[in-house]
Length: 636
Image (cartoon, rainbow, N blue to C red; front, side):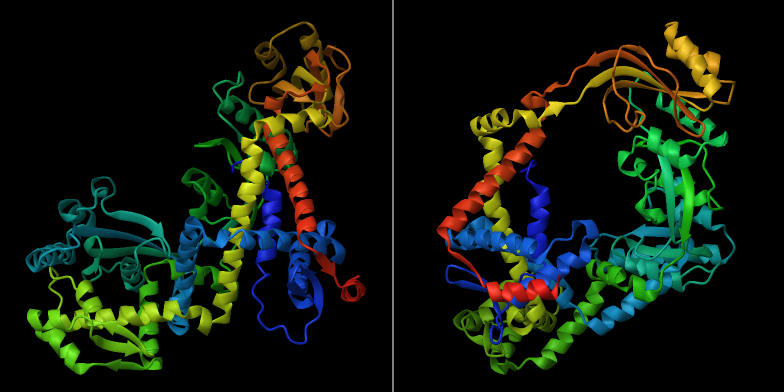
């Protein structure tokens, strides 16, 4: 599956985002049919409009082009259902997992969730610097252990209130493994960085104060707030990265320092990024990265980036696990408005433990909404815990929810006899769980949005599975067919002319002429650097390796004509290139192992197109030309 055609897969799932089960078919125009199945124009138009709105202008397709894609999509889906892919055990299991995930947002009270989102937004605007002391407590601690831990945390707090230094007390009492190094200091953090009870304590304690003891899943804490500052928001930066490659003859640190010297000499950062940065995804854009928060970047990169003060400030070279970097500050983005952040914060709330607060509220609402009828005699029988009497009435209904029965047997099987929980609490917990289960089981019938979303996933998984069998796996496993396809299309897989070379990039034409002279004399790269560079001022940077014509490291239009040192080529202001061509490798056909990924991808497309032809022969496709003409005219 690693070599599947992701370009086509993305189209299928894009179609699925709006191609859902439309049940209302009255007063709708037919756009096409596949065998006995009809597709209506409103469904198709949703697909067309959605795609048109999210793709760049140059990639927009016409009504006819989208219709062809959509017909093909429906053909594949039809065969998937006909072959009963929806009855396969693994498919049903996967769909059940998706359903469980999709239900989560529906199990929360929107009003309570909104209050939590507003709270999180307010906290997002501030960062807390705090220290803490932890007394650990096991999840199933005895009352005696709980009391002992609580008394110990109180003892620590009282010492601090009497004047002992927080750090000293922390090292004496805290069971946080890092306390001996940091004295309990946590540095700055914001919302979602800590468990919710800890976050609450930190954000509701005044600067300089020590909180009352509070409990988290780790144990008892006290927290001291050292300071509060406005959040840093997001940054937009550009960077130049050089990987530390042990096989490279040019050391990464040396090269980044050479580039930095060029920056200090006035060379344009964006140009140097395009020419030298080894983060190719950003190099093409002058090193520009998407905006990020401190938490979204590795610490080393974030620390340097957020230390830059003024726009266009440039960092000194620094190292991260990914290599050596120079960073340029492009723009600072303060915290967005509540409206702009609401969706992101809502998703975070729904995925965090604090969603339980909202869940409790929805259970209470459902209990009021549903018709729940309890059998008081059976309930009392359970509470009395008469084992003999209970064994005789296990199949009896203890309560109904909208007419659906729950039995005494189901209740007793859920009770944890080792728990110290009161029986009435066990009963209430079971009732609440059955209310939630009833809600989950009937969500498709009560919520159209959820029903549509489930239809998306159902069709998406079917399509994925049938594509696996018909295209992706077949392309990977059919080695004979792959080799045959490669031989029949070998002219598509060619190396351009290549050159083994040394490329020198210079800041001044005089220095470039010197480099040319020294290369012609056969001097080494190290010798040339010593002769051309002037101490900290770097005039030449070398790149070595084998490059194809057209590689962006080469001057535009550069061709490999003959072995030897070229004349000085002026690429841009303060950028002059000399190329020493050591060997020329003529254009040649690639071996299959040199281009296997592309061959597999092309073979997949070939298999898919043949499959579509077979489907069109198997299932009659009829397009309503009158409806199509109307749509073409409407969206021309």
